[in-house]
Length: 444
Image 1 (cartoon, helix red, strand yellow):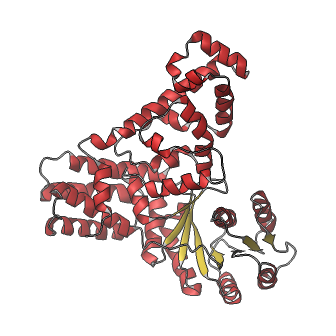
Image 2 (image 1 turned 30 degrees about the horizontal axis):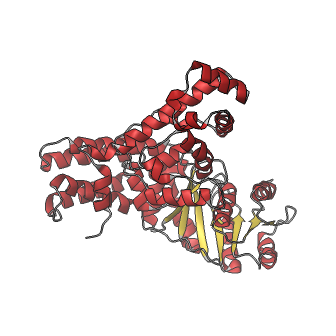
Image 3 (image 1 turned 120 degrees about the horizontal axis):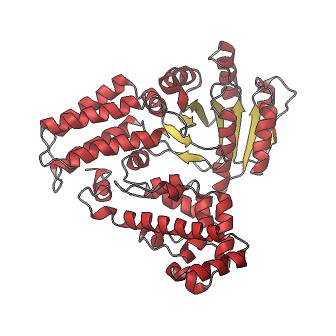
């Protein structure tokens, strides 16, 4: 994943600075070179990288550190702030009555993102309706209707109608009781004049509250031209970047969009309707640098446990407490929060490396694990070390599992426990990223 590679490179650059006994001009220049290499490898625009480099160098050498802040922390704080600035301005997503017009080229993931967006507002407790106005791509309405049916959101449209303006006009009348109306529009392989004219007409017809552009991260720096053309046509006020989980060009899309002045609203990085993440520049850079994003983590946890008898004991996890009983309670809630790798990236792990095995539990395995744990005693759930060979055999027979499955569960628990213990101790090292984070984001 592009964010993994970019994040690792940025953390490595900062760790080199943390290891230096003196932070002088040479140290700052070495840091800037490492940052340049990391950003350019992630396809961030070269001119933008040079502008960022000059700002970091000038501020690091000219500005005086804040009271109580070391020179090293001062430089790291500047890097953090400049990287946040690179991501463009933060954008607000209102939770009230609104109409959102979706724009983008064919293949950008616009239709899938429309359904994900509907799911986002639905989770926030709003009544949502979707209008399918893509009359160009065969099967577009059927795809959108199928996605909306899965999340129980009304999808309005007519697959036999070729006039998108008529579809939207009639659709708005049918969606009057909805609080959020999302309009999926047609895309092409290029920015044809008739595509631009249609989106202009639909914007005027719908009196859209927001005009959000969907961009495929794989486009890299070509995203800038898309954003510029659509922005000139309808005044784009937000961007959604898709497919961030499978491209090396994500940095290019991020920086190119940021240069247009239209803030990034969401990032899509998965296939399910819940794989749409609110973009927050501070939280995004915090995660890249290993500082975590506890705000997003808490929001996901609250959504995951809403209306559920299962409680996610976040405090227990953050303390490193993770018995089998805890795991039993939390596996399902964690699964609802999203991919485990995304959740762990929100924790301020600093330089702690998470074993790959932590991320290898699928939804199917979670179900199997819970069935196996149902055959354990209270003592075994509270103290897994009491589970010997004979107990393992008894648990396997009682749950209809293989002995190796029980052992696999116990190994997974140990791996997870070790990772959490590593996280608990992460703040005590010489490179205390969480402590620095508290000071970085604070405005002077």
